Length: 244
Ligand SMILES: Nc1ncnc2c1ncn2[C@@H]1O[C@H](COP(=O)(O)OP(=O)(O)O)[C@@H](O)[C@H]1O
Ligand SMILES: [Mg+2]
Image (cartoon, helix red, strand yellow):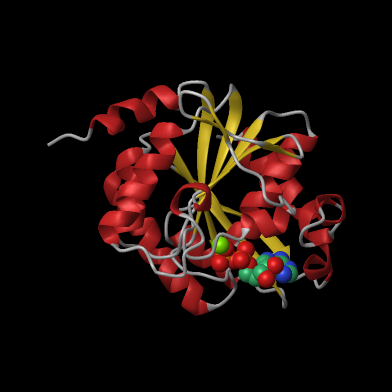
C-alpha cells in the first residue's frame, strides 16, 4: 500500500530550493556542528535557510544553536519556529526525547511524519542533519526526499574514510548528487585525505582544523560564528555552493 503521506512530502518541500544532507556514515565526525553552523552562516548572509535535524539518536542541533524549548506552531501541519533566522525542525518535536531507541519501522514513520507535516517557507536552502549509519535510515531519506544532495564529512582518520568510501559508493549507485567531501577536525596537515577522496571520484572541498574554541561556543551562535571553525567552514561553503 502506498502511504498517502508520501505524496504530500514533495508538496511540503516545493518552496525549498536546494536540500542538502550533511552525512558521513559515521558518528562523531562533526555532522551536527557543520549542519547547524552552515545554517547560521547562510542565514547571516541573508540567505533563507531551514535546518532539519533527523538524527533521532543524537539530536544535537538544538544544543548547538541554544534553541531552548521551542516548538512548531500547529496550523494545518507544523510551522517551524525561527531560531536566529533559521526555520528549525528537529525530529524530537515529533518522536520525543524518549530514551527507547526507535526501531526500523518507527524511524521510517517518524521521518514521514516530520516531512509530511512540516510547512517550510520559501527557502533557498534546507540543511538536513542526518543520523549515522548506511542502513535503513539513509535509504528512507533517499526514498522520501528525492532532491537530496549530499555534503559528506570525514575526519582525517582512515576509519572515517573507509566509511565515507562506502557512503560514496552507495550514493553513486542510487544516483544521488554529492557536492563533495569536507575533512573535519584536522590536526596535522597531510595531503593523503585529498588524494583518497579524489580517487573515490568525489570533490575534496577542503579541511577544517580541530578548534578548541568550539566547545565553549556551543549554544551561543554569535560566539560560534566567530570561531576559526566557522570562518573556515564559511570559505568552504562559498566555494562549494557556488559550483553546485
Ligand atoms: N572542527 C572541530 N573542532 C572542534 N570540535 C569539533 C569540530 N568538529 C566537531 N567538533 C566536536 O566534535 C563532537 C562531535 O561533533 P558532532 O557534530 O556531534 O558529530 P556528528 O554529528 O557527526 O556525530 C562535538 O563535541 C563537536 O562539538
Ligand atoms: Mg550528529
